[in-house]
Amino acid sequence: MPQSLSRRSLLTALTGAAVLGPEAVRAANRDRHLSAADGFEVTHTSLAVPGLDPAHDGLVVAQLSDIHVGRNTPDGRVLGAVRAVNEAKPDLVVLTGDFVTTLRDPFEEVPRLLAGLVAPTFVVLGNHDHWTDPIRIRWDLEALGYTVLQNRHTVTRVRGAPLAVVGVDDSRSRHDDVARAFAGVPPGGSRLVLAHNPPTALQLPESAGLVCLSGHTHGGQVSVPGLTAGLFRRLGQPYVRGWYPVRGNHLYVNRGLGFGVGGPLMRVGSDPEVTFLTLKVA
Ligand SMILES: [Fe+2]
Image 1 (spheres, rainbow, N blue to C red):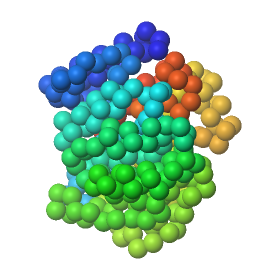
Image 2: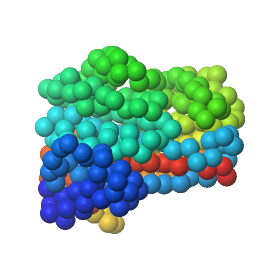
Image 3: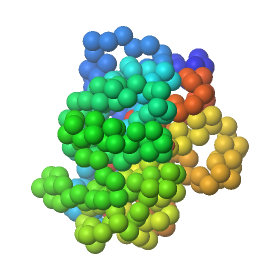
Image 4: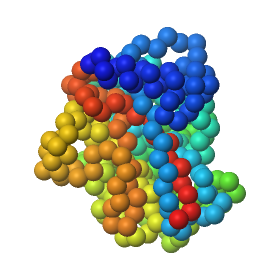
């Protein structure tokens, strides 16, 4: 891992400079020795959402994505991210796919590393999950008490008001069915959409006050200003990292925690990320 990347990530995880504050992050990393490779950046974004239930003004959603357990993602980074999420006490947690990469990966590590998320946790699968063993991944995450949404929605009560969470399955592996996922979704109020592949946001109902959370791109993984975004656009990925307005809705693309291919040296200018989104009434 390049020195500048590892040092910056580690400092962020250790000091919590981005969001959590030193107290919370110290607690998050208590009882373990952090190596440079275990670091991640904590990001914090506020979104003004039309139609958001007033009870959800200030609602905090934590997002982890693209865990890719196995040799290319340090276990300590995932454990540290789970602790950081719990210390922040978000209202809910979302996991947006790609828990593994290949059939050779240690599938048993997925529930072991992701266990213990305290807030209600909602999950969609990614392309690598579908290309390997989606049934096992779903089963293991449901056994933790997490809700896996494959082209369906659920309505949960948060802060005393209903919140619809819509899970659109992965479009990279052609498992997406937006119409089915939205069948029966309340036409207004607070609604989150989870979709591993960011371009799914282009299929969502227009200007509907939706907040879509995605991953998949690893923020470009090797991010070269002026080059990476153009390359991804040519590959059909116009949304690489962070926030985008898409057809009148919000899209947030998390950079992920792990590596699908290429190993630890293949993240440049694109640190692993733990996201906290705060929703505000527009
Ligand atoms: Fe993916």
